[in-house]
Length: 350
Image 1 (cartoon, rainbow, N blue to C red):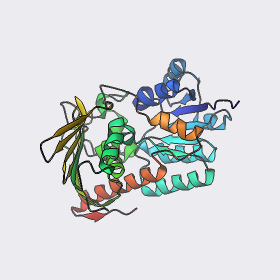
Image 2 (cartoon, rainbow, N blue to C red):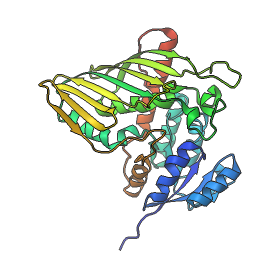
Image 3 (tube, one colour):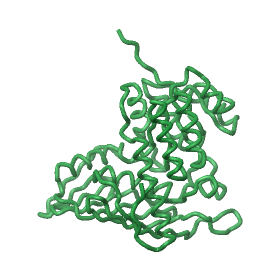
């Protein structure tokens, strides 16, 4: 009888995403356990180890040197994603890296090379395509439920990362250009860009973008030097056009909606949180699908990311969200930022 494989994971970075998603989801997975935590705040690391198991490692190097560690979750600021991921892969560990994959495409290429050389799994934390409603939407679109696709409109807007980060307020690392390189575009835009790639089965061809800083401020009252709003026009490789709005200044209900228009009708995903998917057909018929809610900053539910990562390791297969997905999504983000600066349409350079 085969012994059940247990994936022993270390979470690097003890912030909000680690505390609300990675640590509890590893602890709840029957094929995984928390081997430990690495965090610059040793007291926080010890407290989290007491809550979720494992040990508080003194350093990343100590964790990577532990032969009993199988996998690493990278939950640190963007500036350290590439370095941490590459070190972990070279140490023979599987890696789950939070989005955005890195700060530059040069870094993502180095990460992909390290993955190839190591033979280990590199998965990205783009959780939108793992949401049950989005998986159902993909199925319906593939079946031609709304006919030929004509246009898409996606939103991801909430009140800002300072409202939920463990280091809340104007001092959050999300507002530090040196630590992130991107504002709302890398935070929320990464999710929806990956989602539309998944739903349409197509890469982004080109983009026209406008980045704005409308309201987010540092403690001294000056506007942050990152965008808190972004509006992007896209053309997909398959010819489908669309628009997206990402915002950290939505001080009402969080908006994580996607609307896709087709020749037979309209698909609304999380347009109304009472219904996951609503098809409004051309003949007036309305069809509703309730297949599972969506996580928000105020309503945390299982993301599915950890379960997919663990399953890919146990089953020795590629994850649903690969390193290439992270690289291609970052390519769109980089090009959108450049488009905003140059005020013109730009083709995506993958």
